[in-house]
Image 1 (tube, rainbow, N blue to C red):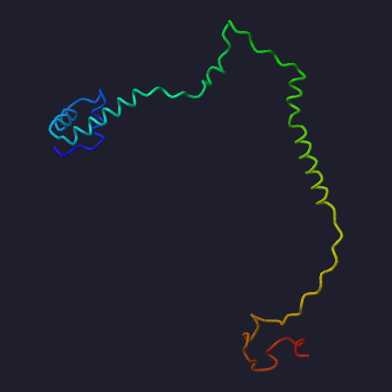
Image 2: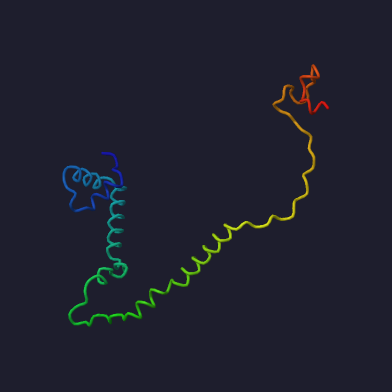
Length: 152
């Protein structure tokens, strides 16, 4: 049997994996020193990982959802003024946003006087791209080129 893939060697570590394939892999591992060394390295790595302590997880959120045990006093009820003041925390920000929107809409509604007129643009030569004669072409007859206004 050729050397099995590493996943078959990892499957040998699973105590629930049994059957003909496990017997074939174990028989091969007994004959192949390379696979035997690989399986032993996997076993030592698994044992080393099991020896590590469990990492400290996040605080249990479920505890905060459960009611308090009978021996503990329930938390103090908040008064109406505490609730009202807590709700007013965002009031200044909301008022500022509302005021800025109102000012913006009011300014957009106004017509502002125009600024001083800009200097007239420099005169440019007219270029008729879609005229009867292509740009740079010569006109065969005077009546064909340009309009009557241009000829005068």
